[in-house]
Structure formats: structure tokens, C-alpha cells
Image (cartoon, rainbow, N blue to C red):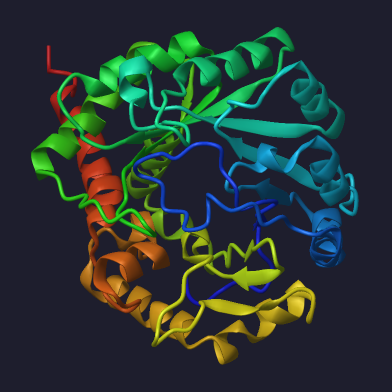
Length: 368
């Protein structure tokens, strides 16, 4: 895996910066303001995306703020320029989902992912603007999805890994009825400056416990665990070099104003005296494909990040599993892009793989 691919596998679109919640760990800087994407921005992105989608699977991920805060009429206008071959996904806190939104998802064939952190008491940091709990509203949205038979994924943030939590969460999401589950250990990034360092044994123990819970009843596609097992199987087969893509996906994030930030959506909306506003261009001025083609030449921090990836390649035995970490984690933890190991690496890559392998070692069959 070297360099950045000229064609992404998906783009992230910001229909509005506004979020109706104010979660304690959120990284977004402009979530109290309602800056909405204009239709010309979406149309310009579609001009590049539509040909890519006709050549193979391609996704547009609508991610805010809270995307549904843009409203159905406006979101429909943003969707209209895209070819039917494009897959649309929305990451939502579910508090605005009702029957009308479910009909909208079905009509536009939108795949839904719900942010929820487990049982009620695990969602105390997911609050509204006035500090009131949001759990009941989240569950009302999930109930609407169930009534309409709309399959959905779930995304869970874990702030403090602790014994027993993984089992509790897995059992909860089994009952919730999601078909895919992703678990993020809280990251220090954006406006969230809370430290995310945890004892190694707690984190690896959390992941090992999650594997055990999943193996007991593997009815959910568990994102992190399945990726780890896929890599472990490739190592055993001697094909681990083929697990990572040949080049990094640029993951272009299109801001409400048409600005393009590569590699890490979490950098959108920020600026730095040394790096500027992290953007590589604007789709209202140049086609997205052209922006991607010139990014290495025009965006110094991207070159610095790739230098950091090469440092990871030479120093880290886990490189084949993670591919060198994420740009935003490097920046918000180190203040630069060419650093190497971060707490995010430790929590969600290194300890993840160690936890999966610890579980495997502890459950090896014994000789008769």
C-alpha cells in the first residue's frame, strides 16, 4: 500500500453542520450552526461520482452534523443529481426518524446507520442542546425503522473499556436488531480534548471479551472482529500482503460549502497556522477528480502524512493490519502528520488484534 488512489471508494457529504444533540465526546466544531450544503455543490460532486459508480460499487455517505436536520425536502434535492448506481448511506443519531423519514429511506434506497452507545445508562453523554437525555428519542427512531422493516447498522462509542462491558454491549445490540455493529473507542480529536489513554490490559481484555460474546451467538456482523479475523486468516495462509489495498483511499469529505478535505473527515472545519484549513480545493471551482489528481502536489500536509505512513511501515509490526493509522488522530494527538503511533492505534488497532489473538490462544483445542 503506497500513495493515494486517484479514484475513491466513497465520498463523505456534509448536508448540514447542525446537530440537534450535543454529545460530550463529539469532535465537530460547527454543530451548533446550520450551514447547509447547496444543490450546486452536490451536483458538482455527482458529475465526478456518477461515472465512477457506473464502473463499480460506489457509496456516498451523508454525515453531518446530523444529516436529517437538513430536512427531507432539502436532502432529496441534494440526492437528485446522483446516478441510481450510487449507494447512499446516512449516519444518524435517529432522534428525528419517524414514519415519513422511513418512507424517504425506502424511496431513495438509503442505508441507515444509527449512533447509540448501548443501554440507557451508557448514553448519558449523548444529550440534547439543553442537556436532556436523548435515549428515548433514539429508541423511538429505532422503533420506526423496525416498523418499516428497514435494516440498519449501529455505531457505538466506548469511552471507558472495562470488564463486563463488551458482553453487555453485544447482548444489547443483539436485542436491538441491527445487522452490523461498529465499535469506536473514544478518540481525542477535533473539539474533543479528553484524553483517550487506557491501560493496555483493559483494552485488549475488552476486545477479547467481545470476541467471546460474538462467538457465542454470531448473528451480527461485528466490524472490528471480522476485519481482525480476516487478517489473521490471511497471515496463516501467507497472503497478508494482499489484505490492504494497493493505495490509500483518499476518502474525500465534501463540506457544506464545497471544500474538499482528504483522508480524515474529522479535519473538516478546522485550520492551523502551519497547515491552513486542511482543504485541497473546492468542487465549485474544480471537478473532484481534478482535485484528487493534484492533491499531493498542492496539499503539503498530505505529503507529510504519507511520510508518516512510511515511518509506520518501517517501524511497526502491526502495519500490515492497520496500514499506518489515520491522519486526524496523528494531528490531534501529536500536532503533526508524520508522527507514528497514537492512542487510537493502541486502542483500536494494536489492542484489538492482541485481544482477538488472546482469545484464540485461550480457546485452543487441547490434545485428547
